[in-house]
Length: 69
Image (cartoon, rainbow, N blue to C red):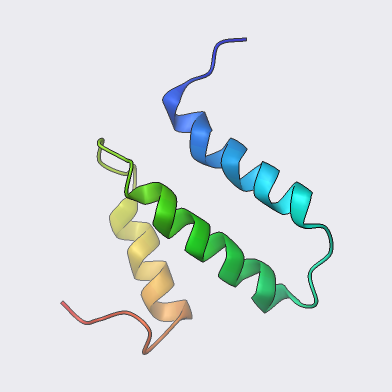
């Protein structure tokens, strides 16, 4: 099976959570995934599909954590 570029972040996140084992709570997992995505996104060169919708959702869910534009 050939590896497609858009599968790389998913595979990295899968391996990250698989090797980590159990998490004390949901917030610990969400924080780990957020930080991993932040680091992975530095390598991205193509625009993120539906990023505006995702950013709007994150802004609502994590009110006060995102800078207002």
